[in-house]
Image (cartoon, rainbow, N blue to C red; front, side, top):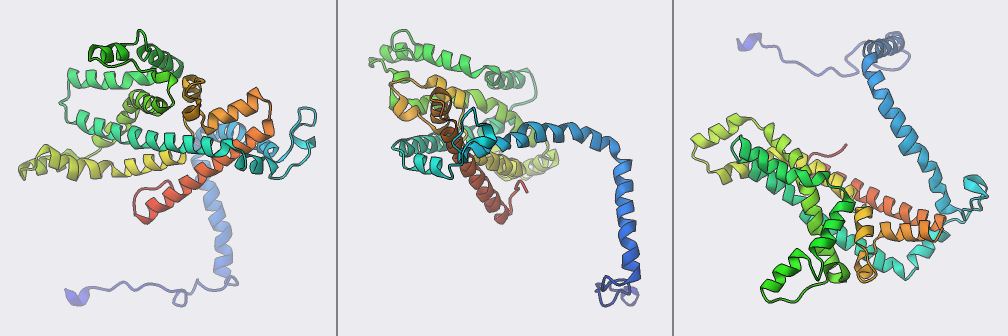
Length: 335
């Protein structure tokens, strides 16, 4: 039998009579044939391209075309001159922002809040998904999922309103509980040092349930036979979570982490602005609220655009960096 096995040899360009220079008549004839074949494949799947068209149009009209206005970051924009007639200013607005006394405060506040938000809001949904996945299918599991998922539907304005009521120094539930244990009331919403903990805790409460559903969907795709085999081998629940569940959802974790890092500096503008008071502005003034203040309240459109463009470039740099790191680590990446 060994004598009958034919070893497949790699075909090189020199071995093939149809490979070589572009002057080969076979190759010249194959190019139009390939184009015709590609056109036929497109025509056969025209329904898919029709379905794709609205999405492409949406991104072109609402995502790419507005980028035309980014040029005002390099102009001294005036409403009379518009986008094209306003005088060029070069990078003056960027230099002004970098040399501003607000630069250090705004950037440090944004980075601290973003890192705290990522450190707590990102891993907690994974932990919740692993815990809920251990519950048996039934009403109790559905009840737990609904309780965790429901805060996602509450608007940010209502969430901040709830925070002001719960954390009120006079009638708030939290301060009443502190008073029962002999503590002094805390003015949470008027204290700079309490702004970040309150912001992050409320983000966990509001967003963890939605992200948990994504991980539960990933856990549902793991082959149950792996768990059955592990049970036969005597593996405990913790062992199965560590060696089966976590590796099974690792690609999803990797992709969502890259996306989260790509939006690291895009904090919830509404929430930061609504929670901002004169007493906590030292910690609550982030890039988004500062852009709103100078852009819309002070009508410095070019300066605000320069700050926003700086924020977007930082996010893009973070996204590319962590995507490259994930690729080098042989984890799932965006591209």
